[in-house]
Length: 201
Image: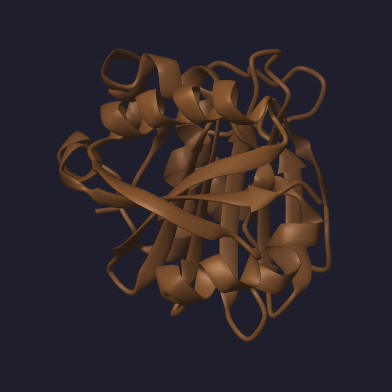
């Protein structure tokens, strides 16, 4: 089944605190342990479920004062999933490029001000980047390589007249199209996340 934005409408009800500000990154064929090493991160515990991860992120933010990035990692279908409640590390080229070395990576981010980014890297090279609110403006080494799935998941590529409604859900759906990893409430609630902190680049 090909994902569309409609398949991720549950996010607002199920993960309202996460969806308000988050970064989700998927790295292929790189274990959580190796991902931690590439990010120069240190593991500090484990939590089960997305609600517990959001709570742990809030505590970590207060403890560090924002001096370190908090993230949760788990393995899913041959990929490592990194979830950052109120985070953005995976959206940075300084993190995504080394994480994608020898493999591929898809990452998307949104903050409380509705600033958002979607990127795909292959072996350290940025292949696609755009803002989900403005999907008609794309860049990277292959900016048009995902135009068909972008349109199919629900992005409006018409230009200045585009309708941004559902852009966050469409970002999750596009990540699924590009990776084959479907995120569901059941997966997120049952996942055992290894929690860690990484230095600010």
